[in-house]
Image (cartoon, rainbow, N blue to C red):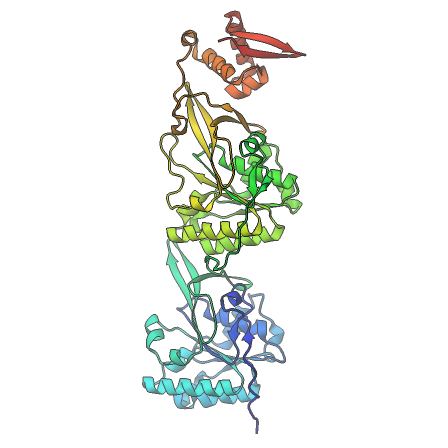
Length: 554
């Protein structure tokens, strides 16, 4: 007579589903009875098959019992599409048996004996019953269900089996049916409607005597099977975050580094806030490319510019992002904000940072994430979790944030994420005597002195160039600065000529090429204006070798 195997010390059966074992603190307890439940299409069968094939071996066999659900032949046909499926294991390490007909003929009373008979014959370590709910539905009353569940759990545990019972139970049945009280573990799969699409989640409702991560954890299914992304949560013991004021990281803009007393602190998080087109992404590119040049790999996370668009933008400023990627010094992670799932996206960002050992990260932008995340609490969780993990790893992070107002008062963050960052740099549009200008100021550097100046800057074909302090009495941060009274002589000049003089007043001694870049005037047009102004005595010319330099006399 065959005897049950001796009871082993309680260990863990790893699911080998990426991300799930960390939620289960190592896996499913061995010798346990576990119910896998969820609506049709949630992924229950693939979930179970992935566990079976990743664990099945000559020493640890798996038995899959089909009741009144999908026939084995049809199931095996679809399983061939997944990389975890191994045809060589079928019939040896993984056995499929259809017990539906036997159960229909003999009823629930003999169901336990039928299952135990196959366990005795095949001696599996893992048994899955699909659908267990079909057996359950054959019961005459709750008492019979409880007796059946208890007898089955005792028999399977005696034979050293870890069981997965699959069924489409409703939330009400989970709360009321006796089998859920008997079960050691309950794993619930969901397929939830979110906006215009569906998102799958796994939720561990019960794992007797074990520590596990609660809540809804998103997962997706592809040709490799399931991949679970543990939900974002605050680390209970985040460790000590120390920002060294001695170690500074260059932003890639020399004048800005000077304003920051040598750059941003290494491992800090910096928010660059400003309106559309003020240069936020460009400043982020300065930081990333300066890091790559110094041998520090970087990660760029964008939601608007795809890799090809960003490469072209960067190339126009002299940066070859594609070459940096080929060298393994850069990863560009692009995601559409239309269907962003924060837990999944955060996991992918962390993986990209790990992949290249990134020391710098550009997250462009907070506004895109904010719009794509209807739950604003989850939005804050996403930012807080990601930024703090990077701080712990010593990764310097730059986050861009779009301010909707071009002029007038502004708000850095509608949902209070600015407290997470250590440094805040503000980029603003200015109305400068009839033309649009830009200004940069540093609002905050945690634990460090910094320049309090509000300085104008230009975007040239080399990137950002910061100029002198804006000469205005008040109103610079509103975007409409109040200047001293304009020289009356300028009032009688044509607009184009007056503009040239005002630029010279602001910039000082300048070449024609520089003036052409600053004013946007073609060299031919500019030369005519400068000659007229020179004849009127409003501009003087000085020679520096072969180069002519111009200066306003007013």
